[in-house]
Image (spheres, rainbow, N blue to C red):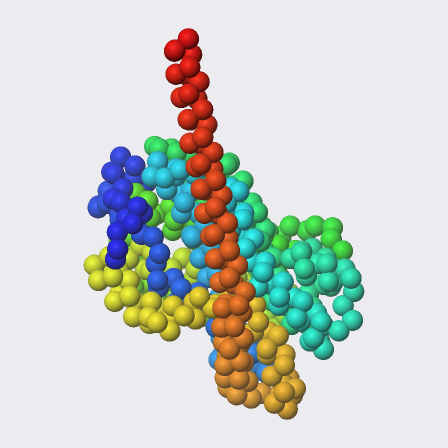
Length: 421
């Protein structure tokens, strides 16, 4: 892998609490994470196809399809890792703290352009969304639908998770600020603090808030802190020296078996009944716990495993980091955004009645059409928006540099004039 500023070895003095076996090499872009993002997107797509074809409950395989909603935990853990690792590195003195302004701008450009296109298309064109009130329009356009009664609209119901993610984006710099004193030797307390916050969040289902009918507080950020924290803890583990968690990450088969076992448990009533029935508070607790564990064990080998260091990420993870995985990973956000609207149109377009079976056919049609729409969305909306932000940030940086040089020149001239006088 080409050397980057993030490929530095972390000095032992800056290691965290996990051990002192060997220094960890910081990595920049990790291709296999793109492939994992693609798998998570297909997991969300598959669980919705299963539900709308009547295969999300009852038999063992149907329960497994229905519980693929835990793919959202992988998305949240990925966000936690990718957005927190800059703060984890800054706490060890390996880089400056990420600027909040630039961070917020990148999140806005990453999320809103493609999202708004989908919302406008669905609310204007999808029959299921006909008759949505102005409050519904406003809630969906502002990603506040989890706080507005009965505003989860046909073709857009899955956006509750994006609303949760936006809430996490908003508070992440505040979390970093709250932990700003945990630097240097005190950085060893960062992981225990994240674990404590995760444990506390598991009790969110037991909190009874006086909310309006049609608002489900299970879909609020506090209930999913553990899913984001799974990735944040992995970010903390990437800075410092290798220890027991890194050793465990090398045992890919063991972690795969753990993931299978946890997923099997999540497919039982321990995580709640199948379908849209709201789980009891203790079932919600277990479901979020299972999701946090899955997010951690699925990502740990990709992030902490040393096989990628020895062979390169693409050689170590041929499927996830291969051309197909990378391509669909780049499209995965649009896959997530569009798949439910596409699924809603597949039924009438191909003369298939909802909840009447035909899951394999509906799945194939939905995947193919969603990929086509997603490729267009990425090429026409996401990538142009990203490039526009890069150009804007570059111009802004150049203007700032010129301003600093001008100020320095003026100061030098003034100093020389004073000296001459």
